[in-house]
Image (cartoon, helix red, strand yellow):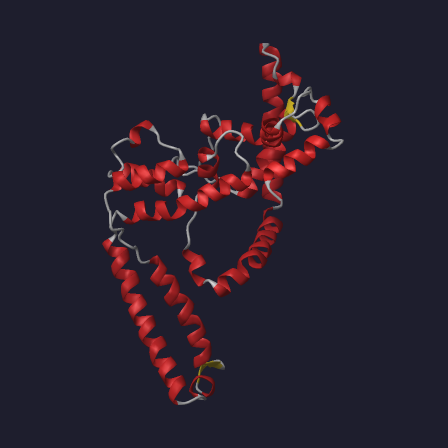
Amino acid sequence: MKWSELCEKVLKSDTMKSFQRLGIKNLNQLDIIKIIMRKDNYYIALFNKDILKIHLPLLSKLTPMTKTLEWGLDKTVFGFVFDNKKQTIKPEFKNTSTEMRKKMAKALRRRFYIFAFVSILLMPIILLFLIIYLFYKYGEELKNKPSTIIQKQWNQNACWKFRYWNELPHLFERRMNNSIQLAINYLNAFKNDVLNIFTTFFAFIFGSFAVVLLLGGLVDPYFLTNIVLVQDKTLLYVLGILLPLLIALRNATPFVHYDNDPNTLMKILQVHIQYFPAHWINNAHTTKVNHNIILLYI
């Protein structure tokens, strides 16, 4: 179902009464988007305006924004500040008096302490849950596409910085997917000879072993299954490990784009991410800007 068709059904349904309670009388598609994105827009503002700064000790440039931390912020900050029923900020937080601001700041600080204590207390359970979750979510994908192991994507901090106001999730995801290869092209413009030598060498070694094992399997059908190396592990088991490693190393080897001018590649990338700080202008070839992109692209 298209978005326009969905909006038309909403406008014709009985849910219009619920929107009228929010103070919206003449509802249109833009109003529906604003209602859906109202809470996310506050998230976007926190990151776009650098209001929320989360850094690791001794690593001030690294922002460890994860889904778990995002969930924690939702419960500690927005669960306290945002009124889900009225889809707006609670009135007490709009009070500009110094006394009320101090009171709300103290209450919010207390919620942060409680969240930190509960997180540390439940860390083993959360870690176990995340391992099981990641296993079921990416297990089949890693089996079919081993290159996913080293595949990079924009981190959560970058996603909130790049997102437009009132941009729906599916549109934003499509835009980010289109920008991933462009970011790879930009990063590959900075040659890493050590990485090239490392990945090429081990890809050659693992590839040679894999070819020998495959040829042996063609000559003798029982070659891969009858020869045991260590603890009942046959050559077929070894081949099953070598092939994913070989694919991962091949994908880790940087591909030099035909147009390796960083400034040109950055202009193409900027069209999709729509994020271009002033100090990036005509400086995309510098190590500083390259490092900025790396911090957003891990």
